[in-house]
Length: 496
Image 1 (cartoon, rainbow, N blue to C red):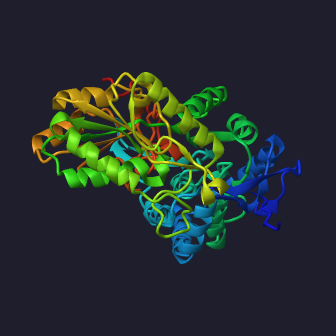
Image 2: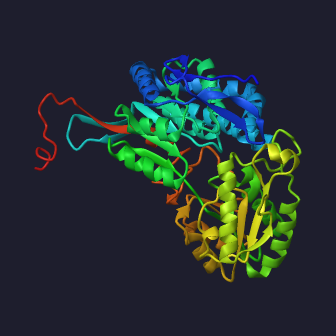
Image 3: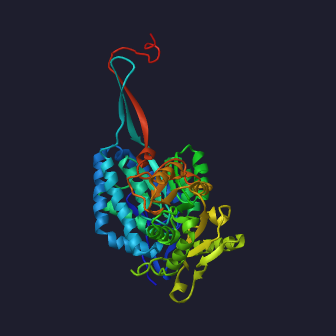
């Protein structure tokens, strides 16, 4: 069977891994469909990529930021032209349905246009000096070479969240795409190359997290790491980066709650729950994995939600009629199966799904039924731990205050949703829900690129994608210009 072979991008050249080893990229809906072979890189490849980035940084940092931004604007236009091709490539390697992969590419387009504007908004401050004939200001400076480690669930959108702000800020980048979905990152970077990005400003090193990722994290010439993935791996990244004093941006897991009050528009809440729980087959850090139902509407909501979940069409995402695609690999299927067993062992009631799909065409890939558990209590593991699959639990509550307490009782704090017609409850929820994102009368998924994205507690370490990414990829320099033509000693000569 013939399939394309891809190489690392290092210093503007496409080079195989030094080991000669490759990793096959398989379509999770049909394992006989091999998307391509990608390098299985090692520390030696990472060293070459970092050296190329370091060389490119010397000249890229001197390009005026508005000129750097023009490359991003051009790349966004190229992505617009290639949107359908890149969306189909993404569905083949990641599995989610075409409507969603088109949205993933669109998010990269949006990010390109948004960050291109930041090329003229890398503002500092001017401030009065405490001394005469002295000027004081602050300016943003690039960091140098930055390492980017990205996940498989949004294989173009999330790399764009990291690459574009890093580039416009004047940094050079080495990106390690997810092992399961490298092609979408290659397509994104190809758009940048075709837009005129100089060689070496962005380098791709493909491979496993254990070898490639760790080498990137520990490299002494890498000045910062931006990581999106699980909280467990994020903890490892933070600890290893600390050895060389690298700042680290960590965007990690979630166990996101949708709260539905008695006065909610029930049909709207059902639409939001279905989309939030089973969009991207539940494989989002913002996925709705807990639905908190006030007891007055719990029975009606549950009946309708279960019926609608059972009617969802699961299959190959290239089929426009399919609503839920496969899970990305067999490991994710095993995780979903394990949590079904855990939930049943804890006494939760299986209301829908609960099994892998293996008959007929399903046998070619990794599919799992949309799964719903009722009778769940807040202390159960199924209500507290991230599954990252099409598994959602229903929890009932009496009062609004109880709902807030339950929503906040977990280790994560990424996204929350509250459905109500009561404006007072809405604003109380905005204030009291411990999360980086709160939606009112909308699902827990659907972030926009110009707002800060990230969470609290075990979800993140305080940095943000979107609005806030420029803050991570730049450092501040204070500048003092003394035109008095004499020595002035701050806090000494000014004390009289």
